[in-house]
Image 1 (tube, rainbow, N blue to C red):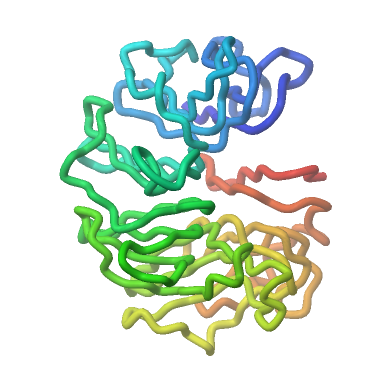
Image 2: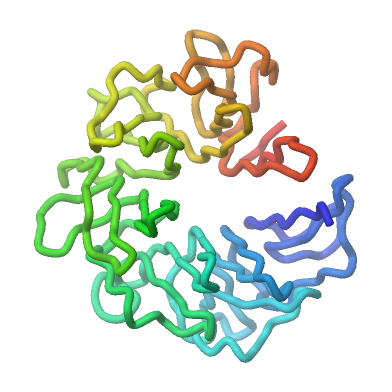
Length: 320
């Protein structure tokens, strides 16, 4: 109860060998009962816990022979569940995992190939761990990826990343699919010339509007706002106060209670106030002045979670 799974590109935690993944107790100490045995290299980017205590784990892990196993199923103690057959053949880098109430699992990834099997950037697994044949996504991540997934109350699916759309020339950064994978809406398209632009985070608000965390790169110098809000009509809300810093990104958005949102990324200013990498926003996008993280962090925030006490758990690159 209250334990925390962490993943990344590391070999040890507090001088104890833990390649790419570890489980922590509520006080931050290492949980010695969890010892991942899935990999000898690579990185872990995503977790999803099942109701039976087993854990889905995604990333770019490698086994002892050097073969990539981007998606794994672990037992409660961290050992590999070898009954998950797809884990031996999935070649992509898994970036995000989202469980559904019916036991199915949505998987967002960066494909190893732009064609053939596992080239769409998103798939759905059934409760048996096999690809769901009823889900045929209208996407092809090509050289990009699906970085974030959110499930709406009506079953539709929000995606953020860099995605091509079947039958269209546009490369979208934020899209919405039906429950079966059919394209429902393109919320944020981007011309193909802006190859480094990308969506990193997306959430649905109670009023059916959408918040998206974006990165435009140095090839879209005209756009400096990294947090966009879309109205229920799928239009960009230009009145929404946005986090701004040219060539930066918003990588994580988490509901923090009382209608507020914690956002993390690579930015320095919010409403003109120095707030490196982390901020708490009101519903209109303005900064919550009661949230004081000093000047923030000296590296980009990559992920945010809320523990059972309501505290923010923050992960990132060189955070101090």
